[in-house]
Length: 129
Image (tube, rainbow, N blue to C red):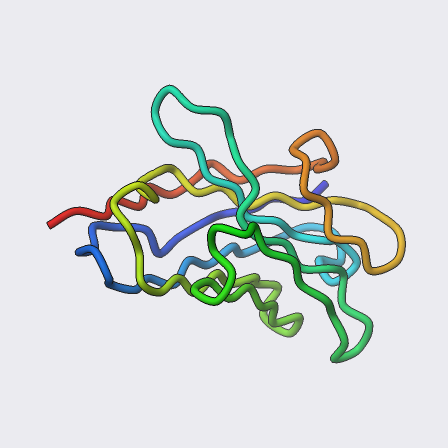
């Protein structure tokens, strides 16, 4: 069992930045791929970014096209935490952001919600002036 807790959400102006954190407890977190998803009111949950399990200091990342170049996902195995650094935020990116963990082989970075085994409760990000 893996428990995930997101933090770092809040209100930010358009063009601003936020860093979200996903802290894990339970099984060895470094063995799991971790993804960030977001869900706006009335919309489906969508993929944002994912990071593979870590092999020592090695891991791989993937991003949705809409956030490439602005968002950065990273993981700190010593702290059992995955981060999502978000820059140049847009109003349409207002949503609840969720992190999720997947028990998956190799260095895969799943992009579909059904591929993830564990989910956090979400953190609200509001981009507004």
